[in-house]
Length: 460
Ligand SMILES: Cc1cc2nc3c(=O)[nH]c(=O)nc-3n(C[C@H](O)[C@H](O)[C@H](O)COP(=O)(O)OP(=O)(O)OC[C@H]3O[C@@H](n4cnc5c(N)ncnc54)[C@H](O)[C@@H]3O)c2cc1C
Image (cartoon, rainbow, N blue to C red; front, side, top):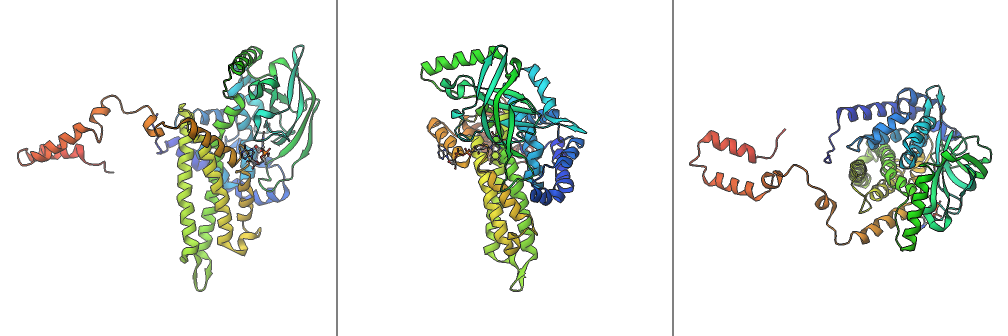
């Protein structure tokens, strides 16, 4: 599958429907949920009714071989409101982790439990971060130990989206702390399991419609088959990890793999905030007059917006490229997932800040949504790997890929074997063109025109 940004008819329709939902349902209530810091249940109900809240919807988008459906959907939804957007897509994050680790039977059992159905909605959470370790996921302290056929989980989790109110918690825990992140496994802890306690709902700067909590796990007992992937696979993984540790090798984990995969999704969410702020600031600058003219007439106002518009398109291309790579199985050897997240999330902060500046005093007060978008955007340089962690991934990849050609040179060529000889820019075509020009007086006009048609750049 080649990288092609032309949307399919289904993608076009998806983006249109998602935008309509964001405009009609999400935006009108965004300020209210932000102010009250309440979970937006009615919006989730409407999302479910419109088909945006179901495991099959997300599996379908994740399975899109172009990779573009998911970022297109995310951008439109988060254009509406990032806090509400997070509430809507949080189960998809948990589903992505389940998809990485679970057996097909477990996937079939738990995926419906993450979303429920319209009228009987359910929630899911992905619980990785801990008070002592957000970035440093290799240093998590929550443990899982066997007790007969069951597992017992003890630990403390922090900043967990849907934590404590979710029907399904996908929990990362150490089964063999000596093995670092390779000794971790993912477990399902259903909401209401004795020993799982919500310590508190966290009071946040932005994205306040989403629920984020601190959780404690005290002797939480779950059945053996709530270990995602099953005991046999875990034993196999631990044995390999022990061999690798003895041999001094390092490799990835399911949790880190899930994060790497979801980074372009998070980048696409940040694109939605950026686009919202840029559109709003541009419209304001066109309408607001100062010194007898619209403020957009001042290059001091217009040029920063022009820069941001350029950077938005660049960040979107990085995001779509990373999503396309994830969908087509091209490895992120140069940190491409992290590049998309770093570029898009830092841009969201810059753009929302600039939107406030463009609107002056009106940007700073709650009469307009830009101050909220500024607060919402800031989360994006922190969660799912801070900007510093993305830079670490990219710089490590730089070192590892030193001497390698850029991605477009490294990729398997498309176009079939004949393309190497007859494709544009090949010596054969060059010689044909020279020969045709040399013979232009001798070759009959209709044949010459046909030859030129082949060589001409494509026209609409
Ligand atoms: C609103 C919100 C929602 C969240 N949702 C979830 C969720 O649903 N599930 C979940 O598991 N987690 C969630 N998180 C947690 C989030 O992923 C972590 O907060 C994040 O990974 C950062 O970890 P930390 O807060 O411990 O910061 P730390 O890791 O302590 O980092 C502090 C600072 O040090 C920097 N730093 C750390 N190590 C290095 C290094 N080696 N080099 C350079 N700089 C470094 C960081 O970049 C950061 O600036 C959420 C967080 C928030 C705020």
